[in-house]
Image (cartoon, rainbow, N blue to C red; front, side, top):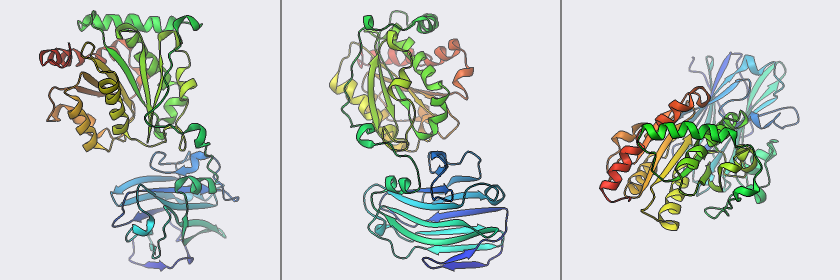
Amino acid sequence: MTNNTVTLVQGANTPIAKDSALEIVIEWSYSPADIDVSCFLVQADGKVPSDDYMIFYNQPTDPTSMIKLQDTAPTAKTFSLSLPSLQPSNIQKCVFAVTLDGSGTLKDVQNLKITVKSLNGEILFNIQQLSEETSLVLAEIYRYKDWFKFRGIGQGFNGGLKPLAEAHGVVVEDEAEDSVEVPSVVIETPPPSSSKVNLTKIDLLKKKVAVSLEKHKLTTEKARVAAVIDASGSMSMLYSKGTVQRAFEKVLAIAACMDDDGVLDVWFFGDKFMRAPSVRESDYEDYVKRIYPKPRIFGGVGAGNNEPRVMADVIQKFTVEEPTKDLPTYIIFFSDGGVYAEKKISELLVESSKENIFWQFVGIGNANYGVLERLDTLSGRVVDNANFFALDDLDKISDDELYNRLFNEFPQWLRAARRLGITN
């Protein structure tokens, strides 16, 4: 790479060298809240072909992998762009933007800049005049004659990411219908007699559960059972393939065998969370499709990851709203990774270690699981109240093996919790 650098002012443009690949680096030295970066791959009408062409932290690449987003550092994000892939496509522009996710405005952000790096040098655009908005279009790479140019823009958007995404053709569902109020959600459990679905699948899974319970000397044990299910954007494929429904069914079979009233409590979480309707085995069919069929960038629980928020609500329900020492509480928590709030998660695990709650975390992706992978060394707990294991593919593990792993550490916690008087 040469040391040649072209510096642009707002509104200016310059040709991009005919290299095969670019790195587009967005950096800042300080911000009052997290900064989310995004790129909209738009066609001639200025709109994305589909929501799959909005690139951001929970959707880091497009369907053709022409552009990829990477975390470079806490104050820097990098897009890698393949120009040979972009050239024959229908994409006319790559629009780069930032959004402040929290308190403050972009006026509080310091030293925000975007740099296009190639083997032939760099193009630098320093954003000098930041405004009171919370979203900003930084720059764009656009077609010019038979190649591309880069333009510095620096245009603010009122209202944050939602209007910015809508302006580029991303379909945003009506949040008045789909947003989730935290923490209040009405939970209704239909009576078993009202259901007419086939019970065969759950019955078969219950037999597998019974074998594993006997193996781990848990046959006579009762517990309150709950499932917490990741609904972040990166889970989209697992929802569309039905993997999430199948995971739910496997946990429902545990509740049918162990729960004192045969009911499974369910949470879905992203940036926010929802307490979904509790469910009995007689109403398992298409539960996920009926209640929360797919992750949403806007509306619903959001497309991000906020494990602490849903964990706090689980603790609230079982220790404040419905406290009891007579029944232990067994939480099966599904996540595909992207676990970054390590300090808060650790604090909640330490806090809940004095309560009759056992956390069984299950990884169903190939991403960063953070503190979940280091539970055995988490200090400060009254008792070891959590376990974690990751699966490359939930559908490739046998039910026998899955249940044996799910019950691997629960009996040890139960004995220790009883010895310490945490549960009866």
